[in-house]
Image (cartoon, rainbow, N blue to C red; front, side):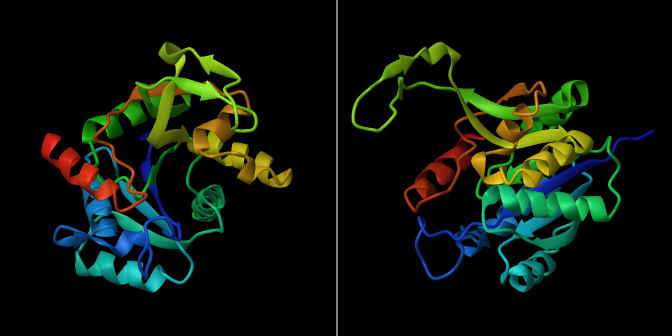
Length: 235
């Protein structure tokens, strides 16, 4: 049986740290808005068959209009998101459940504000998730990492060679992703987690690490735009 490869792309943030009068996914990156750049990059990946977009409630129509204007293939639906990132993922999961996505399907979750898509990383995510059921893109930390309980003093330094910085995409067998989020939802713990892999890991699942890159820039503030254009030249 052929296993479906699905991308769940998140554009649910308010963009307050980025500034401006509208969510940052609509800010131009060159001649296209960020949302179009990200979705075109994902759509160009041969390993992705279907794309489902989760966006902030109130921006669904504008998102749909942009997808139509730029004729982005593979986008199957625009889904209203929740109040937080993980609740937006959960809304996406509920939608995929409603359309009867098979439990053995592989779901690649990606933050829409990481517009530099590397098809090799996407493929490696699907390959790793096929073997282990769950995968996270990550890079080794190049900085020393301090643990501090209250932020006023260094409690201890963590061994840098053991520290990795999580990125997206993160990819999961749908049954594992869905059951993990359902377990957290029933206990009102979804917002205890900062990403999908940490939530899935809390259920005891093995998480494979896929090597990422520093070009996989997350655009959080306007200062990140320079890193984006530099990363685009390096890819």
